[in-house]
Length: 116
Length: 112
Image 1 (tube, rainbow over the protein chains, first blue to last red):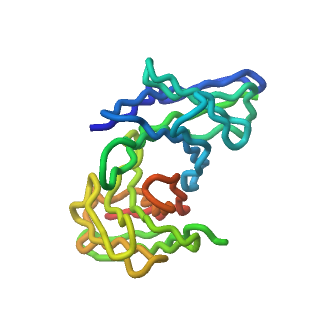
Image 2: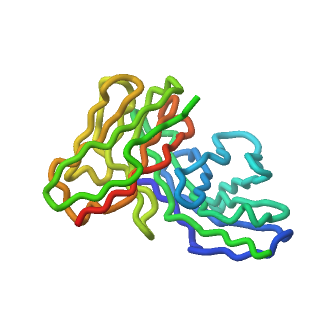
Image 3: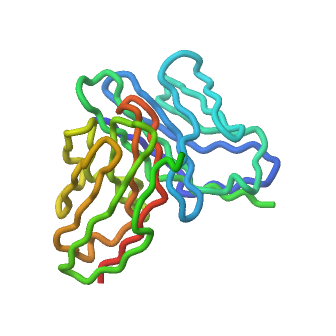
């Protein structure tokens, strides 16, 4: 069975400071990892994904994520936070190694609050 | 391109009433999904359609039915609404189940 954990319900960061939103995962095979963002009263928007290759993945709006296989983590990062980054962030995982259809499992979300 | 569209945006039902949530995508995606989002629970998959002509149950299918009408449209039906179905419902689509998903704006459903 696959699972994903976002250990922080909320992350507060000052505008201009670097931000990190944490995610750890568990799959039986190789992971396919995603980050999505949800602004209030909107659907989720895709930010970035990791399948294979470079462990540092760059995505939309200046976000990046670092895949760490030994720590089974895929933390979302941004060098300098903006107030407009305030939103709900979801990590998601899919097991690449299983045959047939495999659903994507979403984390419970982390609310990012960027303080002016 | 409109992306993924959902109707209605809001709905209030009484216990026992039925309704259908509509979803359409114009991206020529093969896979479509219905999720519900509840506080502290993240997104839970209700039903999915890996390709046109197929549908399968997700994590929480009880009380729901779906129809993949064609490649563009995937509807979710509540036959007899219950207060436990009060939630925000999202439709999503992807080129295949190996690709990122694109989400609609959601339907806020309240069952009294």
